[in-house]
Length: 103
Image 1 (tube, rainbow, N blue to C red):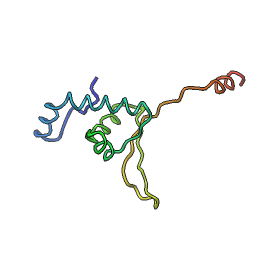
Image 2 (cartoon, helix red, strand yellow):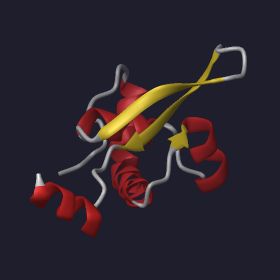
Image 3 (cartoon, one colour):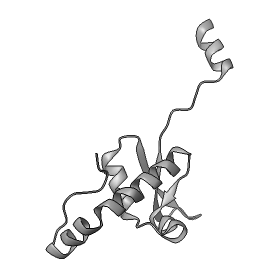
């Protein structure tokens, strides 16, 4: 299953998507691997650090229910940019299991 969006709103973009779909899918897989490691990304950060188009974040968000997003705010509370991450439940510790068993 591809994580990349399938349709564009004009013929030029549609052609670009068809020609580069495999590369975009590969970028989504790289990004998912990083996100499963607990990393959070903004589109600007992704483009600057990994040379991957920020559109891949929106593709993953649209196709994965565990992908979350929220506005990153500056000190005054103004929205700066959208941040994406995977909401993955953590592994229970031994003390968590002991507490669960005793309750």
